[in-house]
Image (cartoon, rainbow, N blue to C red; front, side, top):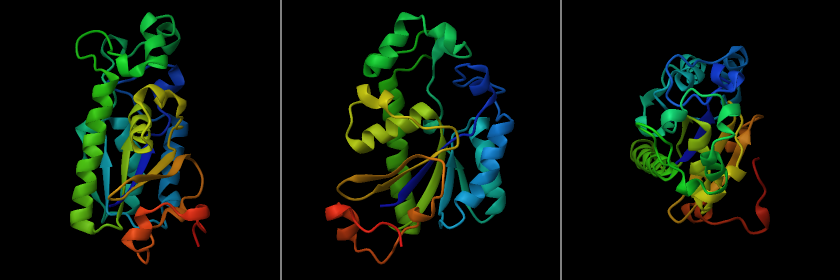
Length: 233
């Protein structure tokens, strides 16, 4: 199965303002976020990529724009199911204010029970479920169209990426707040028939070692390397 390169969008105007953006309109990358996005083509330069999949929100599409410009041959797709969590009445509010809400303790300590208040508010369980379904569907599509050694990028949001990592590790959603992914960081998961492997988590450095190695047999790719393996050549 393919290797999924998850990219959290670059730092946004909501990040710097301390606001829970959700699906708020008008949230874009700030100056640092633009610079982070501009560095992505270089960081991903040695990786053969089959496709780019993005959340429909502008901050994700802006993050992928330099990569798409550098690789005009790359197929680009929008996927609603990896859009940000629907935070309901919390959308657009200051995080400092939300810290005093009783629901925040649930979000932090028992997120599988958290349902955001107000019209359109989503549960964190539903958020994870839709994101995992999207990844599984895209894995099958990329595998069918480009082969089992293909890699593709998916630009999404912090809570979405953390929930995908938790699922890949077999962690309960209640533990996912232990995971941290910075803006424009790369998290990579290589899926196999029997289990996924977390290759990178919140990586902000070189990504050369993620290049697929087609010479690996399917058995080797699906098994854990005893002793830890030799790593990238």
